[in-house]
Image 1 (cartoon, rainbow, N blue to C red):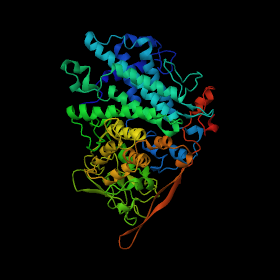
Image 2 (image 1 turned 90 degrees about the vertical axis):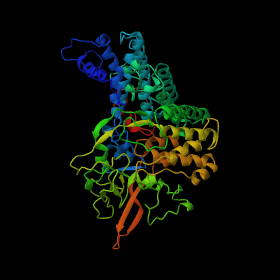
Image 3 (image 1 turned 180 degrees about the vertical axis):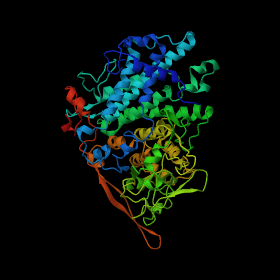
Image 4 (image 1 turned 30 degrees about the vertical axis):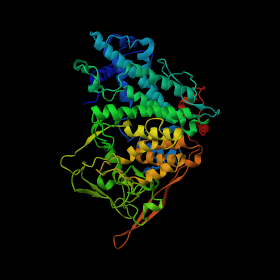
Length: 598
């Protein structure tokens, strides 16, 4: 199956942006000024491009301010460069001139503008794309549904990044734009309430669902001749089941303590129901027809991997992730490192947390007998990078004082941990033929839905309820039994899971939060999770630590695992509305804690 074979629409949209002239800044004018935006509607490929080009506005990996660097502003990661923009955010030293999220505000509204142009007066839907009426119906329904879904997606991103409590005391979202308005011009918009933004995203998801197939799969298109315009050809574009996943994530955010001051239980219920719909689709339709295996390890290098619900277009033959994760000694840049807090969050191989007496954790040998997930996620001192499908050791990590990978040089992690997750273990830059693999960003996958369902269902009925046909505990069994990318088996016998489920909803909620931390680390989720779960800044403003390691004369090691690396200092639980927008639009209300950005 090949993602995004519909190349024509993308090429045409490049022509669109290079050839049209109008008063709209988002559509750059052609120098000789002989066309207007009305010309779009004369060419069906250009109309398709209004929708198709928006996918190119989505990130294609985790090596940016929306991925692992954003984790560097949480307690999971320390960014090696102290002058990095997000490192400055983490320590409370971000100047208005270096806002790392300003570009995302522009990107999201630029994408919303494009689909609003398609949706306005149903001109996109009423465009004749093909002569054959049946095939034309397939195309226009898909594009109409995608347009609504794209608007929902970029609105959701605006809500995640910029939603928060305003200086006026209200929970606010973003200015809702349902018309093709260029927000970059001198317009004075106000932020809608947080609840209004949630309802608009949900409404767009429901509108999209009416037009889209449940999924882009060939086996769901019985008429083979239709597959040129439907089915697996459009894998990677929005479909019906993805809109249900978006709803689950939006409701989960809305239900969380920081955004649910009235503790409305119906929000948790809505999150659980939508996540369960996606889970059921994967377990039944996809599992039976498409070979989806719920315990199969995530393959970060397969753009068609079965657990994907929605992912970006991929970068082929790419090694950007490996470069930033490996230390300088293995030709990397050591741009980021895992914290001791994240390392300590991994349990032991029997499933018990390291703080539990049953875990048998030995602080003098902190990396022995750990959960297999730990070894597939983090490179620790004396760990070996073993080439895939072989016993060949490509590199051994030396993180002790004066070791080649020890903290200090700009190309080594400051915590003495390096990241293994999402690293292709077949890549060695010393090989004659370097094996680089595709990389993409899995925005929503099977595990996201399990975690969302478990958290929401536990809030509604505790760990062992039966309202949804699956309990929160059963969802977490899927998470814990999943195999690792190193080929290790997940937990088959899991007494700790049974114990913590029996302890009740509060204990189980903490357990889910920790499992979510482990499963989604380095994916840009932790920053938002910490904020939606907490109600004060004390949960966010904590120091993070690394390992200080001494190699003894007998080749043993002495570990100081409380070595302070950085202290977080946030004056707000929210991100700021871009300073330039605040200066330009007097109706905008800034988020609390960012009074200097007014």
